[in-house]
Length: 346
Image (cartoon, rainbow, N blue to C red; front, side, top):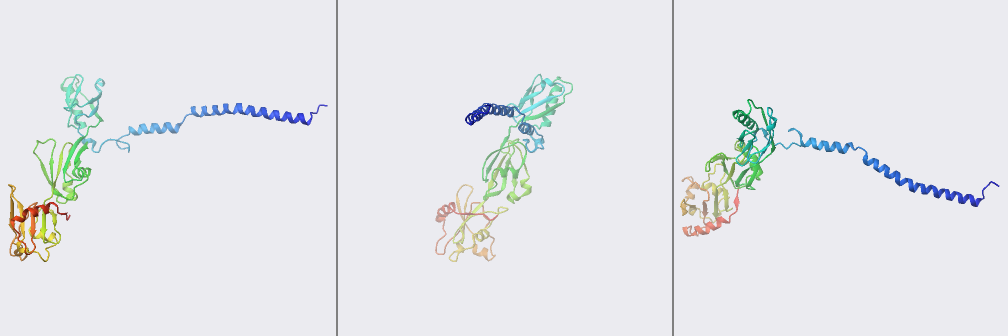
């Protein structure tokens, strides 16, 4: 009598399963939301540590990989526009950041103006200290100066370099480094490099002889300061045209000296139809006039005469037999020289 009928029992089990499923649909989302909220509020040490590491790395010392201190910081000279951080141990009220004005000066409260342009950090510390003592603001002053912002000055690189232009530098660099910034010397670069120092009057220059080009260690070790100008002179070029095996322009090597015999040799010698006894040198005079100079090439080849020493931009013309090497042909040779291939033998 207490036994349920099979039909009732089956209905009861189905109803029970439906209630369980409903409870799952109600409880599960709430549990999931609580779990996500807990995860969001949980500490995340790895992220915080990486952020702290990035901050500490940005303030790392000069020996760290993240340091932005320039090379040669001890020799860095202050320039207008730079900002310094000043700390005076005896008077903290003077501490702060100061920017150098267009005259290279800062203004210290009560102390007035102090010229700091072209001074290193240690020299700036001494200048500020002396100002505070001489102005009777402090009896003694212990000052520390640090750089907040750098204002790099330009080095101007001109002449026979791959990329002439202005290049900012903060400290003294070697000539080799400056030339590397401008892409190096071109194939037509000569042996002379002209320097104009920033602290020298206009027209005052220094000449550096780089006979080995970029490989001349002595010349490439010359110090270049911010504000200096570097001009790489073009090498002297002579042109060998006419009845030679390789006509064209030839860069004067090493000491910049070349004679007629050497120039013809660089052009791979004369052709069989050359009239060597009529070989001429066409040269532009100081006043712009054109001169035609006999070379006595046949006698030079026999050792009976001294070869003519060539100047930069000279044209050596070897005519073909049957042609007259006359002054009237100079203009055509000048035009040919203008379109000649330039050969370098470095």
